[in-house]
Image 1 (cartoon, helix red, strand yellow):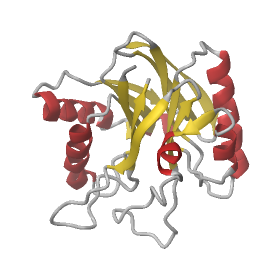
Image 2 (cartoon, one colour):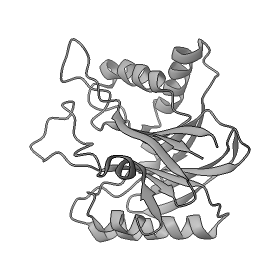
Image 3 (tube, helix red, strand yellow):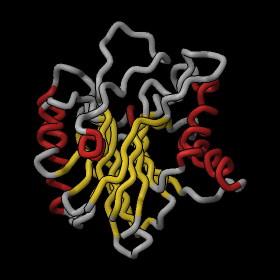
Image 4 (cartoon, helix red, strand yellow):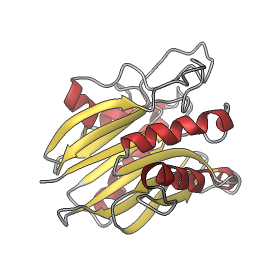
Length: 254
């Protein structure tokens, strides 16, 4: 058995004080140093993903080249794909990657197939579902597509699906995911986080809700720990956070 730490974080693209908050992301992601990180709302024109990968690498190793490599997938939309996508940062060898379009403005899921230190292989998937709160059936449709694709295209026993599902724990999409996967956070803590959105970075009257998840396949033996991270504000500004979402972090025994 080996222990693998996984994570997810929505970057909020380059909106909401990006130049001021980006150092918080670098430090808090770099200090945690998960083996695999799912990224959502990656801003493509500014090469945000490449910058983040390089800076985290320098934070950890002093070199911009290691330990992480970056895999990106743009939205599959003639306009939205210019601006935004999802990504994966991996410290593990990437054997291949592929993706599926999930519609609704070009939403996608990116699968990165990695080799673990014990030479087993695993799918790690980053996704970001449709955001309109009342269109719950749209997100259910998206996860039906996603799960069907994962089970029918190069299916492997070890799978992790992470991201911003834009759905609360009792929503249709989450209930569907739990038919085939387990929630790492819920398994370790007895419930999902009380909220993963919004932080004080994003002033809103909307209620705080849990929208982000770490799903693991039944073949993953054990969740050792699971927690919120990337949740620390700037010491001199309590409204400045790494993002408008907090991240999720879990250690798996595989």
